[in-house]
Amino acid sequence: TVRSYDEIPGNWRNSLASLYTFWKLGGLKNIHRIMVNNFNTFGPIYREKVGYYESVNIINPVDAAILFKAEGRYPERLTVEAWTAYRDYRTRRYGVLLKNGEDWRSSRVILNKEVISPQVVGNFVPLLDEVGQDFVSRVHKQIERSGKGRWTADLSHELFRFALESVSHVLYGERLGLLQDHIDPDTQKFIDCITLMFKTTSPMLYIPPALLRRVGAKVWRDHVEAWDTIFSHADRCIQNIYRKLRQSPASDGKYPGVLASLLMLDKLSIEDIKASVTELMAGGVDTTSITLLWTMYELARYPDLQEQLRAEVQDAWASSQGDMIKMLKSIPLVKGAIKETLRLHPVAVSLQRYITEDIVIQNYHIPSGTLVQLGLYAMGRNPQIFPRPLQYNPARWLKGESHYFKSLSFGFGPRQCLGRRIAEIEMQLFLIHLLQNFKIEKQRQVDVGSTFELIILPDKPILLTLRPL
Ligand code: HEM
Ligand code: 2DC
Image (cartoon, rainbow, N blue to C red; front, side, top):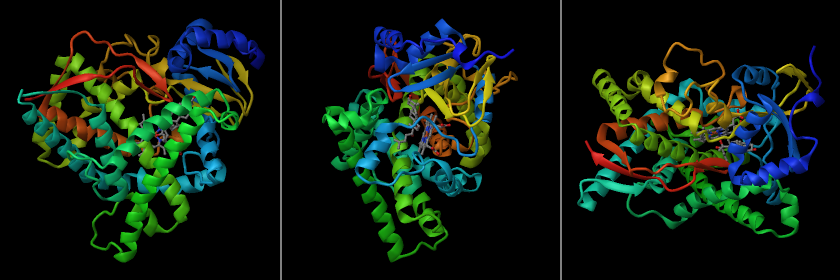
């Protein structure tokens, strides 16, 4: 017999007890580890009430499958209220990230065609390849300058620039020039504001932004300022393309980028296009850059694995004769490495859906309308799900074993990450070029942990050394 909703284990009846564990385990910046701790205490399903939202948390791939079957026609995540509050405050339109219902679906269907459909993503390859090559040139130049035959740095800033240059090339069909020595201060400010926007979002998961706004709290003011900068900078980029397109409509058969394609398609209003393209631009910076930084860190820790990957890349290069689309089809271990990085260091601590029908998970009844969260970070580190979970082992994604609902770093189904294909191609090409040119090394004995600032980030700077092969 199925047990009732109220029998689900957890401290949900006692918010004070939850608050105590929350605080004792380091609170806000530790959410991912608190979730691991909760699964260890309560088992594979628990119910909780933290701050103003209540949820049921699950960890097993088979349970994830049940969850996603009940997501309905208009899948909905936990609303990040800070983000909607900002748009309401400034009377700005929601983009695809924040829309829901039919409004979301109609935008998403059109965006899918221009951003993740197999018919268009081939167009992104030469654009992203060019940026990858330029990153390598920049590193060679820095090595030369150092006079030491190597370059040691906290590469996060370089990677932010690389990621913004990449996503902009795809969105606008134009280079911003961020891999040159001198970077426009407004662009640097844009990059800094994305990080600040994420950082100021996390406290507002627990304290309602409307309240913080009323008392004039600093986090709210910083959050508003961050989004203001993001929107005004993105607006300038968008206006620039819009103006050019009106002066001389592209017709030379060259792929013009996502924004121009959307404008020419003429199926979304300009305001809708602006809102979603701004989200794509902002969503395309910290996500891929940090994932690449973690990947370089892991490859520096496992030099033999790094050589294996390099060998795969060299073989693929030889057999594809410079045809990058072909090349991307023959690097399974590089792709496994990206999956492996996201298993241990996911961008999103959890995936969430409001279920649209009653379901049974772990023999508990969960009513329609409940917010159910899959603990992505906890799942990736669970030894029952991934044997020897702390081992960075890209080959685990190649073997014959089942990967049923285990590869969920970009989410699942029609509401999954819209930038997924851009992100994947960008990261694969980056790693190809990097491995073909440099050895990646790290300082001895520095173990890097992680911290939650809405997305999961390294808790200290990662110093890496790049040495020409
Ligand atoms: C949504 C992860 C890069 C734009 C999401 C979601 C996840 C995610 C987990 C929620 C999916 C769900 O609820 O099922 C990642 C990871 C990335 C990445 C791991 C890179 C390593 C990007 C990039 C962009 C982007 C590069 C923009 C170019 C978006 C947008 C959504 C989204 C717009 C909302 C889609 C919707 O609500 O319909 N991402 N993301 N992401 N991501 Fe990403
Ligand atoms: C954060 O409890 C923790 O891809 C919350 O590129 C639940 C939650 C809801 C939505 C998630 C968010 C978490 C993490 C960051 C995500 C976001 C959806 C999209 C966003 C995963 C897990 C992200 C980083 C987008 C951001 C685009 C934005 C800057 C315009």
